[in-house]
Amino acid sequence: MRHVIVTRVTGGFVVLLLAAVLAFTWAARRPTAAPVLVAPAAPSGEVLFQRHCAACHDPADTAVGYRLADDHAAAAAELRGFLVDHYGPSPEGIALIVTHLLEPPPP
Amino acid sequence: MIVSLLLRALVWFGLYVALTLLPLGVAWWERPWDTPRPVLVEASVATGFLALPLMIFQFALVSRLGPASRPFGSDTLMQFHAQMGVVALAAVALHPLLLVVEGMPWRAWNPWAGPWLWRTGAVAFWATLLIVGTSIWRRRLRLSYEAWQILHLLLAIVITAAMVIHILAARGYASEPGMRALLAGYVALAAVLLLRYRLVRPLLLWRRPWVVERNEDAGGSTRLLRVRPEGHAGISFEPGQFSWIMSGTSPLWSAQHPISMASSAEGLPGGALEFGIKALGDWSSTVVPALAPGARLWVDGAFGAFTPEGRAAQGYVLIAGGIGISPMRSILLTLRDREDVRPVVLFYAAHDASRVMFREEIDALTTVLNLTVVYVFENPDEDWAGERGVVTAEVLRRHLPRQFRRFQHFVCGPPAMMDALERTLVDIGVPFGAVQTERFDMV
Image: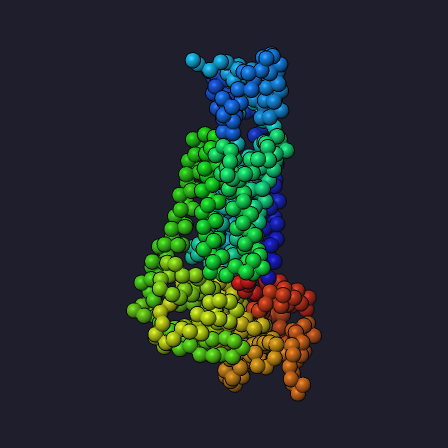
């Protein structure tokens, strides 16, 4: 009957794993309980892009369409909306990333 | 002994659970984000961080770590390994699916294009699908056991490597020092387990060869192989256990076959062992019959918890189907050598009398053991006066002694037979813990 026990243990373990996924999802989205005593240095748009986006998106590819757009304000708004829908850092972070992407590349 | 084994099993399983959940705990502890991210992104991260340890500990489940495998039994660990493979596949699939819902494009599933993060994730997913698929449908895919073993190992290495690169490429949680240290530890553990299992252990076995002493027809398309150790003392085992047998030029690259010992655990002259091997596949049909006396092979054992050792019982009920008689022969011969006087009832199910193995020997054992043998033939001759069909509750009731509920019950045979008999034995009043089965038909 060991195989019956194994199947039951597997079932129980799967329930535990699902509970762990839910618990992590909930816990990871909670703000840290400890008060921040020293304000960290504000990250730059480039740092934020590296942290949130660079694993999947090349900055040059991402920005080129916007830089070529006639209406830069509309392009920036579109990029901002995309970032909010996508992986959503804070509004300040989004502003920094947008600025970083829309800056003309160094000569 | 049983309580001690149970405690050890709980400790090992607790460790397995803790190490599987540890990456989630470390990720939560070190979470690098200053603002909350979408729910589905974090849920996806969680499934990803579960998939990696699930995959890495798949190595541990089948790497024959003696202290860890003894409390469970190798067939139990193999079954858990197979089931956790499906669970790992679910985690590996859920991880990108949740991101797709969150906006990740479907082209991220293409392993040939895109950033490395996507490519490695896609490789891990498709390779996991392949490893699970080829294990579940090996026979339907007409994949030989030997080819499957090689493919399984290669895919497992590819999946683990792809997962680790994927996590490092994703940065985020993996940028934190604790998570990096944990990942390094897990990768090192997988490498050690793999090297020990595929290199160190075979090398040690290579120095302990066995030589075929006899290879004879035992009836029912089965060979009785007697091997003796060459230059070493051999192994000790408990009746009902099995060993992994490797033939060929070296245990380093030979396929490994789990075969039950069929001889007495009290030993044969010169430390010899006997194995009953039924022609069921390429190796057992072609290689085994051709093993001449003097041929060299390697034996890795003993493993398994399908044994009467350490189980208090007033007697034994043995139910065998086909080659399932092999471990029963070991149990019976051991009881004979130990001059055990407890009652034993053997139910031996076969298609017909011509497929019965070791018949003369089994019948002879009834004169030296308190043994009753009940042959059950599915398609017997017309003049057969014994039991017909399959082993059912009625057949059992007709032959079991009054006190059978205090016996230990051992069932070994085709999976469908074991499934049915496990239910039947409990239905007729045998305690759940007094029914032991042995299952090797995993792939």
